[in-house]
Length: 430
Image (cartoon, rainbow, N blue to C red; front, top):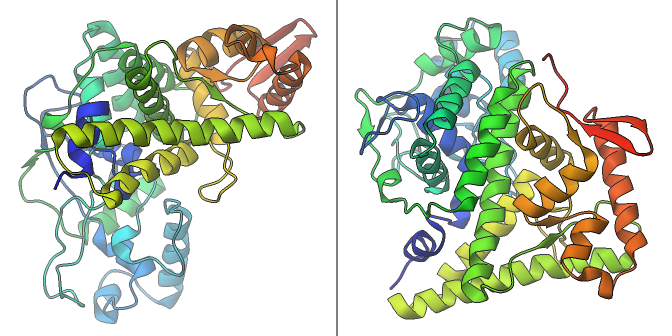
């Protein structure tokens, strides 16, 4: 029986499984960057990772079976426990489709500081207490982030690779002693970790395509990390969201290329919410992308063996969850999902479009970055180049542009000097 990883690695380069969708690719990427024994984005054949469970902090906010004696050994009193627990809840990663409370194994933190970076871990099978240490193994870090890591570290452009390395080193500097870092470090020491670095058997099996889409990820990440005048929190979120966005864009593009090389993927986004025709087009576009991914996966499955409906469903669901996590969809689930650009996507796209200290004309942002490089139709020019104005009134896309500009201006990412001069910028200190 052929499994989903066999199909997605062949088609798209990495393991794109629903259990590793959403924000998990970004978390996995940051883990590999920060915890790689060979250094930041090494070019060695193999990489070894120092894995940290952070299980004490994760169990503190999610596990009712946490022994009170264990907590009392670390935290002073009930007031301290209450305060730390609520702080940690603010750092939790958003997980969709979860009804009720999560187990600690599915509780992850946004890696805002070096000591918040942690690996996947789970309770040993059959264990309901802490008589045995947790198992440091992949449950949600399935390999999409490992593929992104491989794309970055095997960049043939040495100058760009150096810039990305320096950007990550600045994002997670050694010796930072912020209050949050000190707290995270204290809690991390109470958890389980590898005594020695472990060889990553998943990353080495990633299959690079050496195409324009991998260069898009490298360029975007280089630009995101260059904005050192922005708060660390903002850059960390942009790294994670850009990873999710890029994976969704790349996966749809490669699927369409396999299906029909003459018809590239173009994602129609509804940013205005005022025209039913555009909303239907964005909704139909999402369904078409998922259908094409399913078709090429089924075709590859027929060549390799028997791909079950369940495995096919895992591939299909990965796309929707990951696109939603990055802000490319209006919702995580439901039958009326459509492509859009929510604030997380806008922020990540702006930071990825241009390096720190530069501005981009809004029209160029729409046509040269969103349309030409990312395959996203948001404005009239992109719609015209795609032949959509044969069935759409151009004013619909003009209104879409205006609404997108309004959102960017409200978020502090667009300067308006006149009707003809609008400049996209990331803000922060230059």
